[in-house]
Image (cartoon, rainbow, N blue to C red; front, side, top):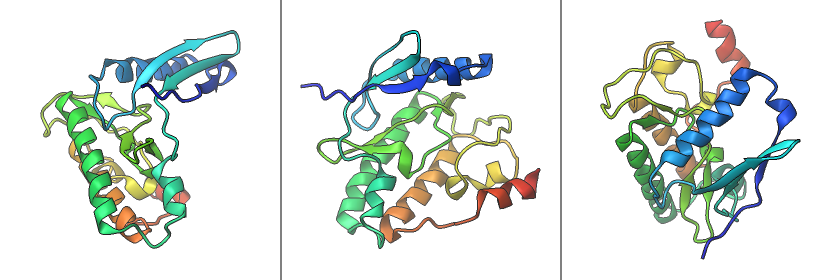
Length: 193
């Protein structure tokens, strides 16, 4: 049985530049290319009408891990973290085997399905680099401050290992209820720009 979400709606007015239109097109195209995997959010369809672009995925009725952790401010039991991390790690392993770096792995981009399995979602910043874990992506500042790897913060080239750093940050957050680092984004920007 398929559990479909209500379509994610993107107003066309927000896709008002060529860059934004290319980004959503690239995200959907990349997501569509993934072979089915239980730890990656399933994309069923996408379409647009005169006002909106729609993305239809599998239903994840328990929301994302960020929302879930709000109800568990001191962290989750180790056995639950173990199961979630296994799901997430298998999903990252699948992405990396396809030469894809997610670049924005964080609690709000991990959804919980009807069986409480973790599903990696939001491939807007994902890129294909190649299947070599030592491959380097030219510097692009992207990601979420509490989960960004040191090489991205240092404006150095980075590769698949950046997702592994983010995975570790997710792991610690699930165990403790708090991210390992908490730096305001304006401070990060002022440091580098």
